[in-house]
Image (cartoon, rainbow, N blue to C red; front, top):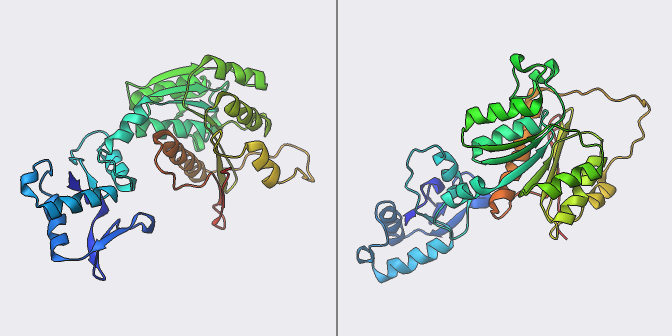
Length: 323
């Protein structure tokens, strides 16, 4: 066991402080010469060799482990070493092995419906994060207007099915990723139910915007029916948002939307044209992928169940959907 270097222990106000840079991760122990010596000692030695530690030191080692201050991370430079260092930093449990979370990511399967400005970008982020299994669904082809905000598409892809392009792009990132593609349109709850019936996956991401609202409700119903977590994400101009539904743990999307959705009282009944730029699309995808990460690795969640962020005035609205 070692002291977590990622917590950057330092001395302040007669305390040794762990968790530099983030108040929610801060833990402290009294500053004494013995504690300072043990911190430095734990940075160099392995406590399996108990002969190098006094009984009092071993007692403190166990206490510090319970506080989430210790790790077995060797800090080697590997493909996922930066991930593993992050998992070490954010994990406040007594778990010593941060690579546990990397292995969990590799074992999970993610369903992504809709490969546009959110879904395509999310698929790339999750692949780079280490997710190895995907089911990707979209009926559309790449259009020239997609190139302004969707990272997986290039000019040479115009006119090709999105599912084929995304699969090839993700394979270039990680040749070991397993991808099932479905080129089809979801027109009813029954269409979506067939996906839930046929395929096994650990998390569903609804990144589709049509049929508007209805498809979110279809996902919500099937999430509870099949007991599978769901994240619904979207953007509109400068507003990005997500809602994370966990059957048995959160309220339904029906209830959440019923209490918080703005009613459709537009004066203009024509379809509103899409207004979005790439920074907002990328931030939205990053936010949703980050929420998906917490769901997939089952870390103690520090993110709200639902969040809306307006990037014009930086107003943040958070929602607790727990039952």
